[in-house]
Amino acid sequence: MNDLVDFHIHSNRSCDGDFSPRELVLFAKDKGFRAISIADHDTVAAYPDVLEDGKKAGVEIIPGIEVTTLYDEREFHLLLPFIDWRSESLGAIIRRMTESRLVEAQERVAKLREGGIELTWEEVWEKSRACPPLGVKIAQILLDKPESGRDPALDKYLEGESRAYGPYMFYQDYFREGKPAYVPKRHIPLLDVLAVAPRTGGVPVLSHPGASFQMTTMEDLEDLKRHGLAGVEVYTFYHTPEQIASYRRMADELGLVPTAGSDFHGKIKPHVAFGALTDGRYWMVEELRKRRPQ
Image (cartoon, rainbow, N blue to C red; front, side, top):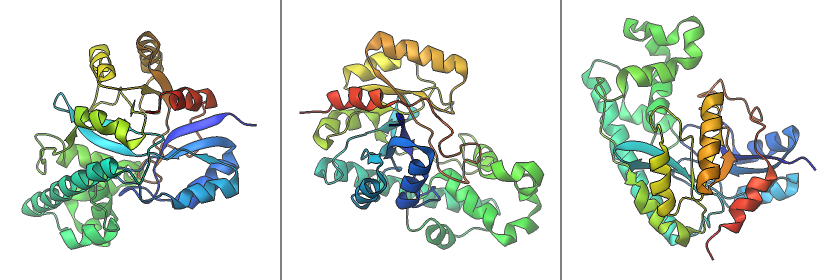
């Protein structure tokens, strides 16, 4: 049996994913993955239906979610594989996140309009499938509009090779701190999520610690471990080879389970192909399972 595992995949139940949970299961089967976790942004809408899809395809589905949090004034993403998607504690986190992300998205769109960019909240809400959209999704919706091609201010995001990465370029130019449509984060504190994680059945794993918006240090990991962190995503397209080696050393020193996650979304991340990350192995699943709350 193939031993491949990916703990970090997004479906179209996320506000910025392209493929249905069932399609992702079939991709996993085709690529020879033994197990995957569909860890959508702040939602468990893929469950429980995808569990049955996994059984039919012979692919183990590890119920998961990716929670957007705040720690030390930085945005941190936390995976919770093995969650009970029916957990009321988890539901409370999701409701809190949904409300804050909705307000944040509406304010971003309002600031774009104040700056002369033609985009309405109604357009964004419809195109995001009634899921409060993150900044990159708002950018994608804007750039996909036929009318945007007539706005000279948007040319740099729509021309030639830049087009595939246009949403990310737009995010950097408009939504980062100090930019025209910046809105302060309202994310739930990471330590709050770690405190309730045992009641959700999930095993806390820090996503892409070396991402530019996180830049997780050894001291961060030590503190988060004291609050219940069990694993760290070492193998990811966010990391350079040097970062992979560094975070693997940190994980080993702290007794954290090193995991692998592609963070696959679809066209919004054209550089991440399904199945391209092959560092995940099933022993990671077994080690995390040992750390599930009793």
